[in-house]
Length: 256
Image 1 (cartoon, rainbow, N blue to C red):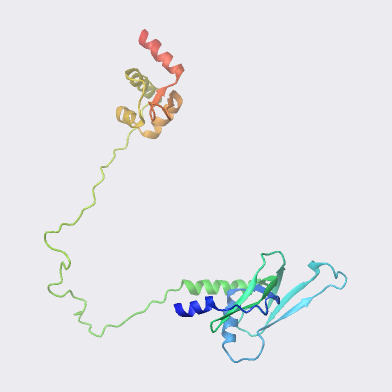
Image 2: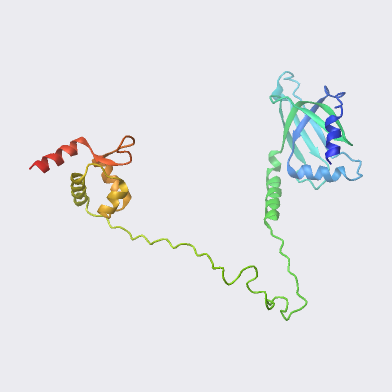
């Protein structure tokens, strides 16, 4: 396989058709699969035909040009499709590879998006739903066991504990301690407790205050956001301290 790829990479790319204009079309999956099956058959009939409609009163108006594709065969769902043409796209070329030879088949002049006509939307939607439902069906297989005495389903003697010894102990997952739900105190009572704690020392971490007050962390944060300033940097990083106006109140209370 590597030798084959190296021959392709080292070979010459045929560019004789590089300037030929080609059309690139994006088609639904049901159309692509049907065309692939038709290509492998010996049916000489064309798979579809393209109909170009022009408005003679607006020859220079690009919007007056309409492309329609009529399908041949009854296994492709809707028979009529609209081709939306685009000219504003990234320049592209079409390449082919056959028997180790790479060739440029042309450059893309027009790009089309294929979609059903408005009158065919209901039928196309039904096909899409059927395809989705089929993909969701799980093919379950039931196998009948000839030996219905269950011999093959019983564990054989000596097969217990294979791959392990009696010295090995099963690793048990560590049991996490159960956290007791903390009950909220009255807001005014908790504020008094907080002021007394900050009289003891000026800086506290949230974890320390939770242990001291035995209050929920979220409830404490609400109180701290009102009473304190959080130090994001410096020597007291990660701690709370009272706002200046509350510091004065605490100092005055201590002086009294």
